[in-house]
Length: 326
Image (cartoon, rainbow, N blue to C red; front, side, top):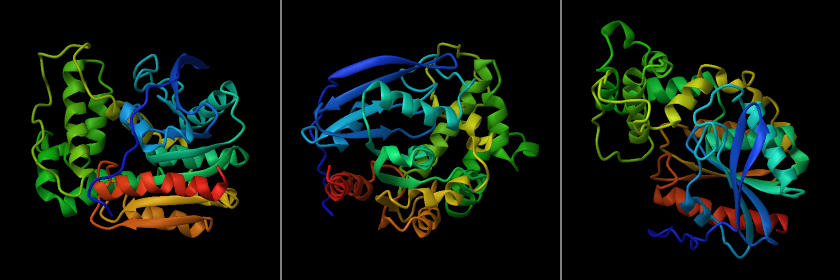
C-alpha cells in the first residue's frame, strides 16, 4: 500500500439541516458531493464523537451523494450530551428518518468502531434499505469487548499505560477502573466529571494507534478550575452511558442476527493489532456473513488515521460501489 493515502478533495456540503427526531433530540445532518450520485451514509464512532469535515474526503465527490450526521448527543446535534432517549434502537430509527426525509430509497453504509456497530444494527433491522456495507474496526457491543479494551488488553500489552490509567484512583477502585471513572462521569459536578473524561479520552486515544507517542495521562481526579462551560471530550460521557447498558442490545445480538445480512455485500477493513476492537470480532462476523470480505491490515491498529487502515477504507468504498453497480 502507498505511504500516502489518496484521500479525495474536500468539498463543502450542498445541504445542511437540523432534523428533529423525537425524544427531545435534533440532529445535525449534511449532504455533500453529487446530488445525483450513489447514496452513502457515514456513521461516526464513539458513540458521542460527531462527524468531521475530513470524513467527506473518504468519498469521491463526483461519484457519491454523501450523507453525514451527528448522532444523538454528539457533535452539532442538540441538546449536547443528552443521554435521555439515547439508545441504539433510537439511533437506528433516526437513520430511517434521515433516509426518508432525504428521499433516498437505499444507500451504502460506511462506519468504523462504534460506527460499525450501528451500521450492523441498522442493516439487520432494515436489510432492504442497505446496498452494501464498508466496516472498519468491528465492535459488536459486547461486555467482553469493553472489558478487553479497558482492562486485559491494555494491562497485557501496555502495562505502563495501564499503570497511568489506574494510578489516579483510590486503591480500592483500581480493580474496576471503567466503573470507577464511569461513576465520576455521571457526577453533576464538572470538577469531578471533566477530569475523569480527560483521563478516559487520553487512555483511549493512546490505545487507538499502533505506536502510541506517549504513555502519560492526566493525574488529577478533581479540578476546581473547571466549570460546566470548560472544554471537555464528549465521547467518554456517551460511551459510558452505552457501555453500562450493554449498548442497548441483547447479548450476542449482532452475530445472532447476521443471517439477515446474507444478501448484503460487504468489505471489512480490520487492523491486525487493533487494541480496542481486536480482529477476533471481525473474524467472528465474517464467519457468519459469507457475503463479506475480511481484509486484515498488517502493522495497523484501530484508528482510521493509521495509513494502512485509511488506504483500505478509501479503496474499499469504490470497490464495493462497483460491485453493487453504484
